[in-house]
Length: 313
Ligand code: CP
Image (cartoon, rainbow, N blue to C red; front, side):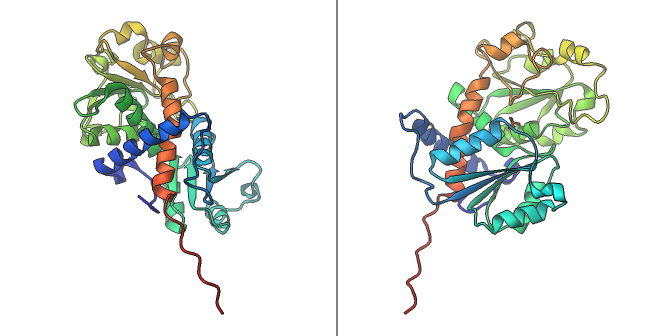
């Protein structure tokens, strides 16, 4: 993966995914040390180019880079020359002129990280683009499930929520199906993309059907800020029909785990008690995000430095 962009799970093979998970296991060990730092990326520069708000992804990319001894620069659109109408592409080219080794991009519009990747020489990592993909979220979700269950093939995973508008759902569908898991998606019909079966998943229009006998329930955030029209009658009705609580979870396997990419709308898609306690693994997901992003940064930017040319006589 050295020097490659990471833009979508759909671009990766199952072999790529295993390589990333194995590397994340090594990186997890670094995070357990007293001194959580290795010199692996010393001399490398990572730019976090975030055009949309983030807590988990931006912070964990920053911590991941710093644990690998890279220099990490955080760009956020507020306070930048975007407010003077500089374009996104000019912003990216300007930052590339400062010689970063990796650029991590989040944008609210699908396709922007790929457009930036086409224009830059530096590898680009997609940190979430519109409703398209959020590949490192799916990778840390895979990693969390693998650590909890010890395998991925043959597991049943239910993804519940706004499948239509969710980049997390799209990336996780690709990730879990590539690894041989059975994936069900559940939502009100207005939140299920037409033809979602073509992605190799089983659509369900009731939560009961979706969680029946599953190993994993992944609950998605209701993205009130992205919903252009009313996709469901009211938040209260959504909570009553698709909000997960312990009562609805009892149809799943006894050792089911509950996941959520965050941030959680407590009492809407997930009952507060379930968000805070097992079988929820939400904070394990956050913890694993650092090791996983260390693995991705190492695999993309961890090449040996080019030899320094002999000075001309
Ligand atoms: N899961 C996720 O992408 O969270 P942030 O928006 O806080 O980065």
